[in-house]
Image (cartoon, rainbow, N blue to C red; front, side, top):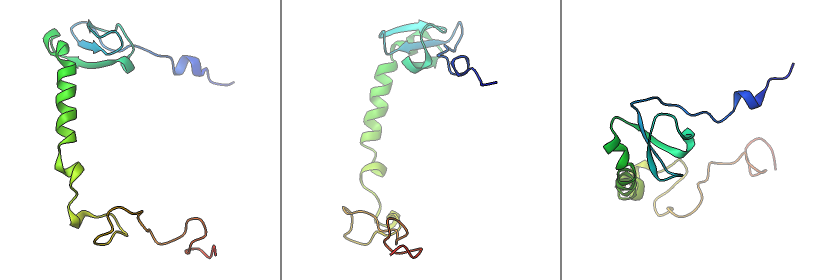
Length: 106
C-alpha cells in the first residue's frame, strides 16, 4: 500500500496561544497558528517583539552583510587548491571529474 503523501506533507500551522508571529504574507502580527510557518517569523514572546520582527530581520541582514568573515577572507583560510593571487579563479581539486586526471579517465 502506497503512503498518502498528501496527508504527510500538508501545510500545517504550528504555534499556540501566547506565541506571537509576524506574517510576511499579510504583513501583520498574529497570535498562535493563523498562517503556515513558511509565511511567518517567530515565535516571539510578546506582541511588541513580533511587531518589530522586520526591523530585527533588517538589522541582522545588515550585520551579516558587513561581517568581515563573509567579505574579507583571511589568506590562511583559503580553500584547498588555492594559491596566493588566485582569488578569482576556480578551485582546482586535482582531477577525477570529467576525465581530467584521477581514476584513469583520460
